[in-house]
Length: 304
Image 1 (cartoon, one colour):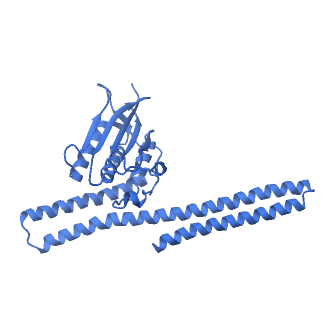
Image 2 (cartoon, one colour):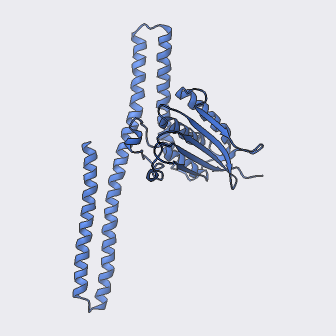
């Protein structure tokens, strides 16, 4: 709390300092121009220097504010990743120590092992997220793209999410709106596409909280493109947050995600993967309390 308050004070101080410098510069230059208005050359030089000075002070202030905010985002990311790594690791150690030190019946042993495996999967998922976030920012396009059937990837991601989150039948549904004979093959990196779709499905489940009802829709769109739409009935997203949620390390306000944790990388990975494959990612929501829809649109493999 103290560090957060310090950052806010730094932003305010930087903004005030920049504003004061601009005000002083305006006053000095206007006064100088009034005094020397008869000298045309000096007047022109004064106007030019005044514009340069104001632009420099303004840019410097913007840079300071941006760097303070970026530092705050990085600190929040490190804290989130540390928590996402430390929590399952501590749980795994606790269950293994209990299994080693106590003589438990077979059912209890199986329960402990299942929980430890689930925490291991969570730990592995976090590590893969961080590694993929670094990988997808290094190159403009996937290396050695192959044919990827997006419909198969969606089915696999949905099955895995249902198993991992232990969902009841019908809470996570796939609707294929393609016409008979229409393919869903794109050229790209299967691992990246699977990570992007899995992130969208996991996000929808996570933000649905206690009432999971998620629909994953596959549909052809105009211009030989394929859309994967993931719709939930969660808390929704305010209109002013829709353009920000794909930013790296960005997290929704605490009022919308107070019970949720994460690295802030998931949606940024989705957007980067979409861009690397020549597609796009977008979000839509009627408003708070009305759910949301995330769309990953990809160009289909060129017709031969």
